[in-house]
Length: 156
Image (cartoon, rainbow, N blue to C red; front, top):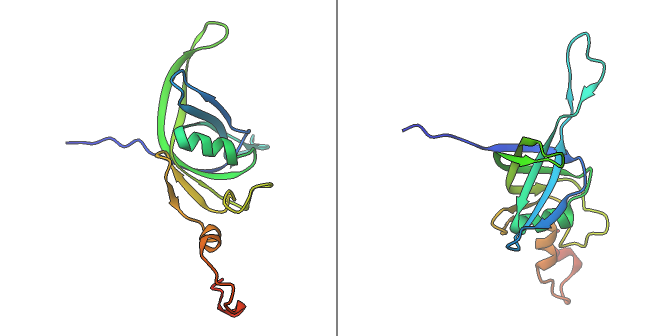
């Protein structure tokens, strides 16, 4: 039996700040765009093109995205493609394709104003709301250091 595969993995910069809203049932949903530099080849190509994609995150992943991501941040997003129809403000029915995020890894340095727990250095989150990989910085912070121990005994 043949099986289909619908998986998207992208590393990119955010094109705008995330926008969070809530469904009528109270579930948080956050939308943001990602942009990828792609140079065009050929004699008529005079500038690089920046295609962008729309990303949708739900529940805990939506809350994390809204809290920590900002325009220009580098992020790894894993998810699936989804198309949906909607009616625009002029009453015209349109179709859009978006990435529904299932996993996210915030790349780069710590966000300005973020505390040590909320830093952006390599934290990975899944749509289920569980943290997949605890950053070394948080692991060091959480490890108990005996006040009587010599500073040379500190493992970092």
